Length: 263
Length: 275
Ligand SMILES: Nc1ncnc2c1ncn2[C@@H]1O[C@H](COP(=O)(O)OP(=O)(O)O)[C@@H](O)[C@H]1O
Ligand SMILES: [Mg+2]
Image 1 (cartoon, rainbow over the protein chains, first blue to last red):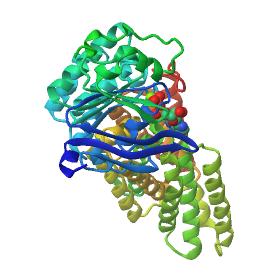
Image 2: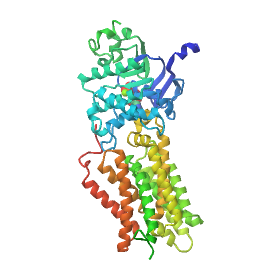
Image 3: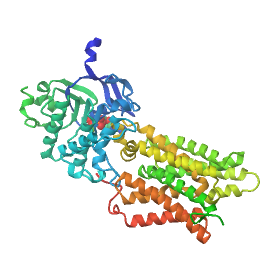
Image 4: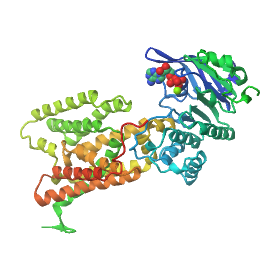
């Protein structure tokens, strides 16, 4: 691969393997993502989706291979790179007694970007408040972060990632704990922002119903390996999906909207 | 008797020492309480105490020994806590008991009268030197400055470790900065409240503040107020009734904690599980 071709990729993994003790979570992954590309990463539970995102921002050690994001190598010490990668992680536990509010938690998204010792400006707080409003949780702004529901916390994480305004956006099942009837709305909101800002997006889900309307590319993971990589119209077909999720009569037709297939 | 503002001159040193000690300990306490690092506090406090005895034994200033040992303890226990691997039992228990063993060893080795060594157990705020006060003031002001400048980073790291990491805050830097500040504060406050009691002055004000508010800034301010109140109230009580100062300081801080726990809005909130 020539240097010129390589440079259009903003994120790339080369022969990356991650082992947890004897367990192989990622097995020789080679993938590159173009600037502005919206990739959906599909795969059953335990296929390595979360591990893949963590390896990209340096929060998971990989024993083999190399990773480049925006020309840098991610590592747990490379906090400057993480300012340019917004990450909506899977819902974590938060002590309900902790002295931090929802609004402050969203503002943390600005804290990294601004740099050490710099205070949030009025414009930063406006962005925080607008995003809260926009994602529909401004009524929770002053509640302790540990005392809101899982779905509300997930919306908080999404808001935090959006105020970070980073060129790369990693979404790890961002709507998994949100009410089914609100999931689509939230997903549409995120997509809207992605389209405006042209974030390079890696969107992880195990749910076929939660494939966004815009989707440039699908990567399917299985047992820590790239099982398929291609256009949605090629991969979002029943036989592929049934095979990916292990067959046995698993039915998925009609679960995602038809326009993925007729692009 | 010479008086300034109606207070006998010889009481001014303890009042200033209590003021700065109260500020420093209660700020560091917020770090320890919010991050659930009490075991780390115990460990460092005992190491500082051991270090002071070590200093007395080899003829250093006990403060130098206390600083050295508390930094060594931070260097050992810090990385364990940092990786979240530390359960209060094993690793800390080993460091803790080793330090205690060394403390008794040094105590035995100190030649001659053990009076100055024993005063490290209780501390003696009434005999602090002007140098002690300068050092305490330096630490207290540095901590205030640190928490003012890096407020948003410290808030994020204390309440939101994982997220602070995700958004690109240098969490390790902030954590170790606070850990070093903790070691120094404990070492320096040893003279005031003593090795056995420092731990309560560290925890009680911030734990009380933690009971009363969900705002981090309010928690810091309350903690500082409680810390100073404990020190000053303790000095006043000990002066009036001729009681040991370290003890009265700690008892007042415990009383504040009990009252905070009774009136806490968080009493009904379960702190352990929430899915
Ligand atoms: N910290 C860990 N320690 C040990 N095994 C882990 C750890 N994290 C993940 N794994 C294992 O690695 C595999 C991939 O995990 P993960 O990336 O979280 O999968 P996914 O997000 O696709 O459900 C799983 O089998 C999981 O059990
Ligand atoms: Mg996952």
